[in-house]
Image (cartoon, rainbow, N blue to C red):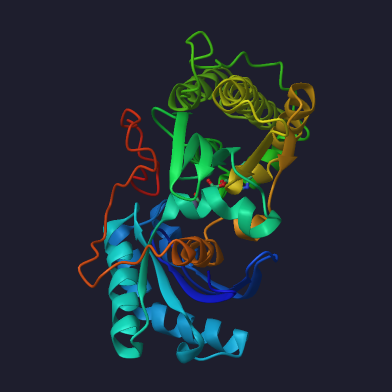
Length: 366
Ligand code: KG4
Ligand code: ZN
């Protein structure tokens, strides 16, 4: 096994153009030498969501600048890399293609090997990059585009225990913010409003809690919230500051309750399948930044005897360091790709799980 591996990672599957240089010395913590992320939110702000064509063009324009910035920050050249790892799915196909073409060009020009990376594997293996977490562990991906529970058995072996059948929670937070006239991204704004709100005033549903298993649903909650809002508007002609805060608090509590209960079931299923003596629940995704949800999950972990792990937010949201890390794991396993590597809009981590119905606002994820 190579003692030291240095990987250039590229990520462009959604609305962040990212490049990173990561070095790993066997048996030591990962060294993230650079992690550059070019955010595109200003380009999509007027459209109320990510516009795939705009995203793809922006990735194509910015990827080489992003790679240069990542190499410069790491004080390295392409010749210092052992391989080039790139997200080749799942995600918005135009963006994924931009990244794959860029990586192929870099590989052809430098003679370095190519490594194809599943974006979801990037999220799922982040705890190994940041904390050296040992297999197996339980992972909850919870963001604007993802929502699923995974048992991470190995770098290339995952069991999906469940996921959302419609919206991702971040998407529901963003839609709620829009319904209540707050800005974008909605999650942090809803959380802030909720601080002053009474979560018990509106009885919002906790969908699918009556159904066994770990699947979740968040789109009915959004509809219930709209109904509650419309009733007040019909009655009073508009929302007071307190009405808005109470609606936010009620919505947030419903999401937290659903996530915590489904996570409890996922913990039981994890123990059933792995019987690990030191179980870990790791979270990734922007929604994991929510204090009420995080506190709920932490409390649950304590009760279930799980350690709770939340990597730093910059590595929980989309970034290329996590892609470079998967590159390290695949490099050590000798798992390389050829120039025939394709971009894949859909690419579930667990090929045996039933397909997910939901896609998420940021495009089909798995
Ligand atoms: O992981 P992320 O940055 O991007 C992807 O979706 O890939 O997650 C962004 C999502 C957005 O929907 C945002 O509203 C949500 O995470 N979010 C939050 C909070 N901060 C970000 N949701 C609830 N509470 C928060 N504090
Ligand atoms: Zn992601």
